[in-house]
Amino acid sequence: MTAFGALLVPPAEVFSRWAMSRLGRLAPGPLLAMGSDESLVARVAGGDRQAFDDLYRRYVDLVWGRLGRLIGPDPEREDLLQQIFMELFRALPRFRGDASFRTFLYRIVLNTASDHLKRRRRHPYPLGAEDLNDLVDAHASPEVRAAERQRLAAAFAMLDRIKPKKRIAFLLRTVDGLSLEEIGELTNATPAAVAQRVRHAHRELQVLATRVRTWRREGR
Image 1: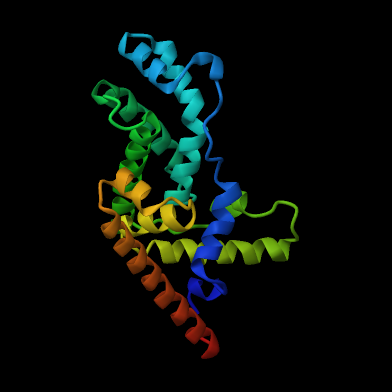
Image 2 (image 1 turned 135 degrees about the vertical axis):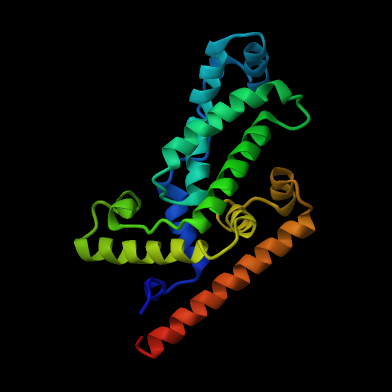
């Protein structure tokens, strides 16, 4: 039996379990005294490096969480986090306020994640138990932890079968609960195109889950 054999619940439910509490929070840090995002961006444009440090501290947890939801427990996640903020620093001169700063930052996160997922499809990274330890309940019994690691490994293996555009749309819609319009704004796609990607991803995951149930019945 393959690793998929551990997946006994609908894919979306599995993804929601690991995403909602264990890969980082999805709210920016307050730093209210530092001013609005726009004021910080203006200060960065004026050469104030401290303002960029403030933006980093405000959004690093949010970016870490968003990235984790998109790529999973990847050993390159820390490097990608730094890459995102370096790209943000280079891209800030292009920020004109047509969208919110958070949307501007999210687009960089999504583009970075998408490029990484494309590379990873060409050079897959097999998850080991140590990669999943932080995503399971540390207070659970060894048996429960082992079962949860199996389910997570199966879920991530299924996600890795989905093309990045579909995967990202599916996770933003199913796990993060964004609207089709919000996802479209982030991914530069129409709501109809986003809906199609989500449907295709859901269908492909359901096909994989059906195969799992068949394999288990046949004792493979």
